[in-house]
Image (cartoon, rainbow over all chains, first blue to last red; front, side, top):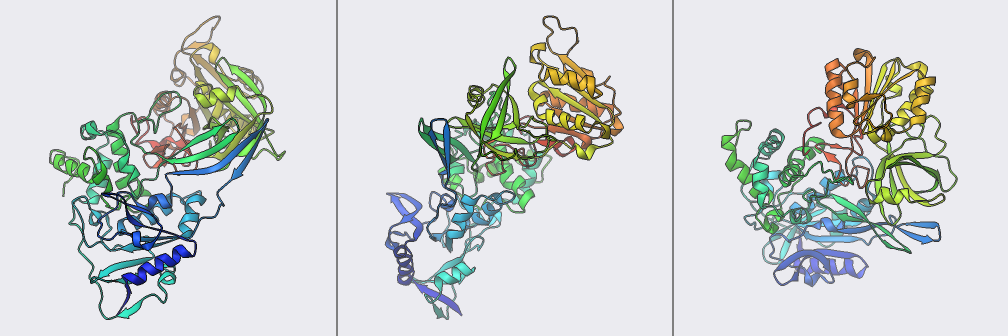
Length: 341
Length: 271
């Protein structure tokens, strides 16, 4: 026994959400040959037949650029206005890949482990996330190697699995998911098959040990000779979450603005004095990988990577997490400190 | 992440390139309490925000004091503020020096240059409760005699509170007749009992590295050596990733760490 929704009914549900004043986010062809998660004006703009959009759903919870507060000068006086409680619209994310939704529990911990980030939390509260199980994967995908998968349920409120040409099986996973699909589905006899994911490509425990034991390994420097330090990997990564805070203003006032930042930029760690504690690109790459596979798992128990493969697809010099790990694996037989799998 | 408004009460030039910013809460409320070693994010409107340690007396917080050096655009703009100008303050953030926890012990404080500023609240606390501690030794090194901070306080602590203060400079100029050499040269002779001492260190990382070595050589326990780290910070509350040193956020897990906690990464380049 399963719950089934037709494509037409699903589109109606999205259009109703928009008609009620909410926002719908889904994969769309934003330019010829460029599929991204984007705000949809109508359900008809949602694409099917994509493998993974070039961005992630991260930006709808943790925007690329966000005002933290505004200030206004009047003579010597300064007035502050807080924007943290500005309301956000109810947000329906439709057709997220499971590797994208999996980033949500990961970022929930980052932004709530001690202080609470109300900017992130209010968007998270306002969002219902519907994932769509993957029927295809490409060479860049590696979800199964990091504990995720084509029908992984982490972070999802409801999972859709393709059932024939015209329908999806709906698996409601949370109260938000059940509320969304209440009365919209029909019971059916058939259940969808969970598609197989990409084959295992590396052993995450090996990577964890490798990054711990090989701080000074020259491989970091060698690998990143070609790294442009452009941060495309981090900006398209669902889980990378570093940010900068800058001032945008003039003589009358302005705002403090939080912008995405990346540990691959040379200025990321630079002090005002010019001293840079992490000055080499190779060490910045080591930092990124060890944060994902050792530091975050040590602190929170899970890997800071969902295997979406975006870093590999976008890197102009072919240095995604997967390629870096492959090159490390190829180089490791000569290393005594690790046991390659 | 919205700051509290404070107004500048006074800016006091300390040495040729350091100054103390004295701040009052704008709305007339009381200066919030803090622990020695914690920092605030200070925001010069329209310029930028930087983490600066608090250098006032935690046992009598009349107003907020921050002593810093003019280095980057924010601290340079800060120096130009006038009495009555507004500044944004977020904090206090971070871990603190173990002052109350160390009652009964000898305290050895090693400071390098501007590193004395984050230690000043610890010294204020120690002299306010002097009877609770054994020997209190301050070893302080600067580049030249012109860079010695808090000269009035140093004299007062030495004279009135039974603090043993040793100062050394890298380059002797003018009429300097004191010690010459790096601060670590003072450690072997300093009068404290290594087995019952708590050490507090703040200064450039390289200075702290050699100081730790000397203290360990004298037999001070790794867990009793406390160091205050410095990193680029943006949020100050453990989100933004800038100050991450392996698993530690300097803003949250620090700035004050035991050497024991950082042993595996302290002094390692490119962490």
